[in-house]
Image (cartoon, rainbow, N blue to C red):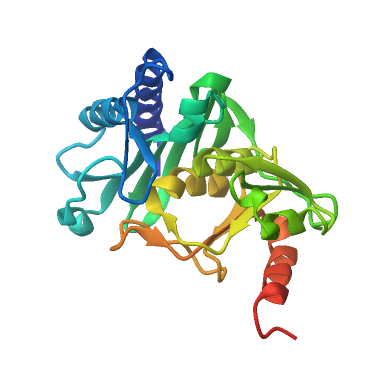
Length: 263
């Protein structure tokens, strides 16, 4: 299937969202906090509104972190899955990893995606049909086959916990990154070898990145190494594993050995 139209639409929407976010100064933007304590700013909402005007057509639906969920999306084949500002904390703190994340799911599969980190001037696009690019140059996931010396990305908050610190004792090069969409883009581009987490993930945090990893020839699955599904209810996935395809067997073995009851 020709994905050029989908990718062109994603590119335009990413750039539109990025322009809106850059127009807000992080020290002047209004902030409120959701019930679970995560921040949302007027920048998030403005980008969300603009991207929603840009993307869905009559036969398509919409799922976003910053929009009220419409159950009618569950009956649609094509659904845009969006986080208009992944990394709101980083945006507020001046950490340049914040990004716009746009994924397209068809029949529950993430078939195209893009991640744009305006502060880093990095735009990732991809689909299985076209491969993945970074600023229009082809990229590929890591071809590493062993975990020894691998670059592993973890959430910067998780690294502060004891379990995160233990990763540094296992022969990995551990790097902390905040936004999950940007983390997956780095794995897709071969700038890191792997990332994994047993906790459930919101679809808007991973749909674009999963499409990118697959487009780049990598592996993406849930925590049990089962295929990831999108446009579900609730819109969450049971954990995440993303890595270069050759690394998946070693990572599966590592994760299995860490599970309770393994001998």
